[in-house]
Every structure is written in C-alpha cells, then in structure tokens.
Image (cartoon, rainbow, N blue to C red; front, side, top):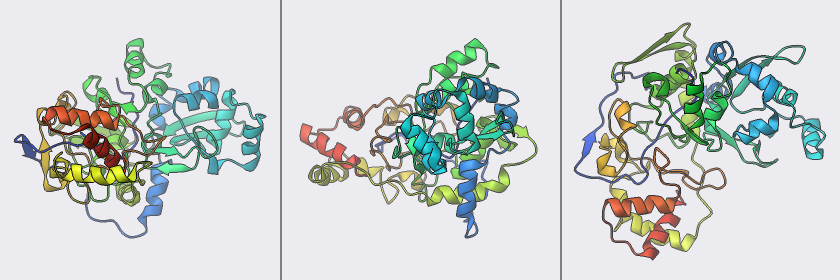
Length: 401
C-alpha cells in the first residue's frame, strides 16, 4: 500500500467556497520548514530541482516497483502519451522531430521511450540509461504531476508549462503497471482516472483521490493544501518523502505520519524549490466573452457573494486564517477528515480556464465537471437568486481568473 506518486507542491479546495457561521481559524502547523524568504538567485536551482531532482526515489520506483523493467519492455511513446505523460519538444534533437513528423521514428517501440528518457525529454520521469541503451534505473520528479506542455509540436508534445497540473496524467494506471503490486492494489490505482491522485492512501489505506492542483500562482497564498494543513514547503516535504518516496525525514503528529528514510536528500532543497514555485505566475484566463465577464464580475462581487471569501489579491480568505467545515461549503467531509485540520480552505481562484489543459474538473474531488456546475452547486447550497443570464455571466468572469 505504499506506492505513491505525486510530485509537488500544493493542494487547493472548494472553488467559490463561501463564508458561513461554520468558518474556523486555521491552526498552526506542527511541522513548519523555514518560512523565511530564500537568498536571491535560488529560482534557477529550484527549477532544476522541480524538473529533475528525484530525491533519490529511484530506490522505490526501480528497486521496489521495478518500473524500469516495465518501461523498457512495454511502454512505447504512444502508450506513454495515452496515459498522459508529456514530452518536452525542446529536449528533442532536430532529427528526432523530423522523424516523428515523417513517421520514421517508431512511436510504438519501447526502445524509443528509452531514447526519450536518455534525452531527458519525458516530463517528470528521470531515467538512467547505460552504454548499451538499456534503461537501468528510473525515478520521478515534481514535474511529473505539476507540469504539462503546450502541444505546440503535437498532442502531448510541446514546450514545458511548469506549475500547470497535468490533468491528462493517469497516475494510478501508471503505478498499476508495476509487477510488484497485488491485484487489490492495482484495482485501487486503476480506479483513480486521469488528473486525480490520492496523497494519503499509502498512509491510511483509504481510497479518496483528489484533483491534481496547480503549482502556479502560489506567491501570495499562505496555506498550500486543500485542507490548509501547511504552507508550500510543508507539502513539498510531505510529497517528496511520503509519496515520491525520496530520502529524508517527515513527521507530523497531527496526522500520525512519521517517515524516516535516510540519508536526507530533501530538506536542503526545500528553499530553492519553494522559490521556483513562488516565481510561477498563473496563466491568463480565456477565451471568454469580455462583455459577459464584466457583468459577471459585478455578480461575483455583489449578489452572488463570492468575494466575501474569495477576497484580496489571492482570491482567498485563508490568508486571514479562515478555514471552513465541509458542510458549510457543501463538500464531502471524507477527504478533510484525513487531514490535520478536518476543514477546507477557500481556494485561490487562478488558472481556472485555459483550454485545452485547464478546463476542470473543479472542487477537491472533481465533483463539478464544469464551471457551470460550480456555480449551480453554490446557487443550491446558499439559495442564491441568480437569473440564467447572471449565472452565465458569472461563469465568463471565472474564466478570466
């Protein structure tokens, strides 16, 4: 039950979470890595860590799960793309690009995947290839789940978009390829589907996957999880050690998790990793109807009441220490009950709509497939009186964020 991926940074919660009598103050985390601003110049190092550093997790993905065997024998580029893995076009030599375009490069051959790994072209999958072009070790980095591409060369192949959640990525299907898993474990992983991951399953044995969140737009947000458990470095440490299975020590008595996997290859990298993540701006929204969006902004700030909780530059009142009971925002309590706070935060509204990469689903559990469904959820939850036009306009405004 320990197989886990999840690279990176943060979780976010219920879109359009509204204020209520059930709001509570965010507790102070018992695990708090240094929150001081790092020294200038760490962004470049943080980028390298985000994209390439496995924190030594090859000992899990190779030695335990034997994923190198699976990749080199059964995962062709087409198979990899079908489960949402992405290829960095800028890492491909001209002759390979030409071969892909001319269809002289065999994308159904696992040997081609090994070549891509040797080039460092598969986002978030770090492979060691020997002189005979045999994949001998494999690990994962933060970019696996928290980067995608712009599809500028082809579907799943293009320029990197760091910090963007890979909503095409079927993490569970990838993990389920491991020959080291039991049928029961494979059934759990196979149930998740694209764009979802359960960062608690290997700790408590429950199966409640959540939507992969963005790792951009975090600069002005204090707590970086759906449930407000802690800031970005807290979650980076949790994920690197308990999910990616990197080497280090993580302990949080609030959730009963203590993992010690020496030597420590994580703590010295948290500062630059945070600096890089905080440097990633959310993409501009769109496309949208500008006139409708202007009207929708008025709805957002007035009759719909969204701005009562989605306030300030970060569009969240979590910066004021507010968290909410699941019932008060109409969300399922199951995931929150596994957390340190047992509550949900107001999600910062950023990068909600940027097709084709960012088109939902929404809420922590993906229960709202579209922005229209988000609006309808809160119309019902808070008995809002909004006309059909106001609802449409509100959706168009959300697309701008």
